[in-house]
Length: 394
Image (cartoon, rainbow, N blue to C red; front, side, top):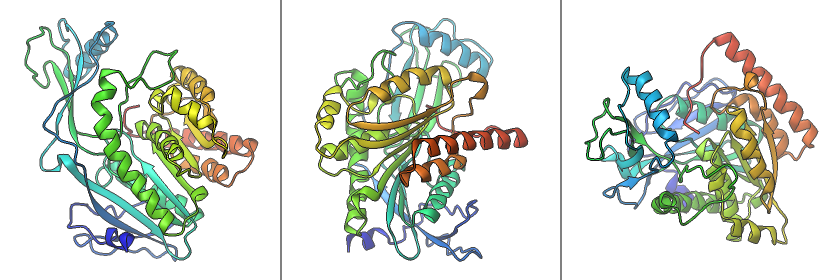
């Protein structure tokens, strides 16, 4: 079958993330990693699936020019802090996406997880920008998050890798003809990958502008990633999972992509159970105003959505306003309103009880209580550890 062919072990381009903090036993299938099992009786098997994209990496993606001087201040602050010297004076600021490290620029690894026994649910988890499914702390944490979810809702979980990879260049030249010199006038992040544009439109705008230059640059990437995600949803359905038990989750820009995918699927006649988002900022990228208007006319009613906001209380005011205005989405928004109570930008296992209650269609009061409990536990853990989780940028 098609699903079985996808579950074959990869050629070793995934590393072994064996030390996953989960109540479930995890069995990792990979010819280089071998097989790892714990003493627990519950079992989750992980398969590493080679993933590719046809999006070319030869063209250059140019992001937002600094048209209102707001980014110039950020440029000065960032370079003074990181490199201990100011950029003097930056004439403009650009984000430039250039081909990433080869040969990995157009290939990566998707992680397929499945619990033992009967399978009733399916989840897709979309990572944040700069994250990788098989390396770094985020890989371990994201797999742990999904393994915990599968202990309550047995079935499948897929963690796709956003593709292709790029080098993200934050360029602050003092002259328009300057060359990019990392460490002097440019901050370069290698291996950058995300699902779609993270362009933030003005605070009073809540909808995607397809005509914007940056959004046009990201169309091929978004569509390539969307096709792969939609393919996994189709696999879930062929495996016998009811559409109303398929959920898309995401963190940061992956949180926005999760909502974007849910809307796309509904408009394509493939409505799922809902979408769950952890701390995603550029909600303007979810859909166009016309797409929401079309969605609102559906005889199946609005799409259920759950949205957590906790790292930027000031920013969350506008985000929540947009989310509440979207026709065709039945969204429950839970956000931290005071700066003193905010928590770092990361995806937290302590919020899974609220997620579980929402998936089980518990009342808003129950979900709210578990949300508050989860936030309290996060604060307690952070105080005890005195460490800051490392997450992707919003």
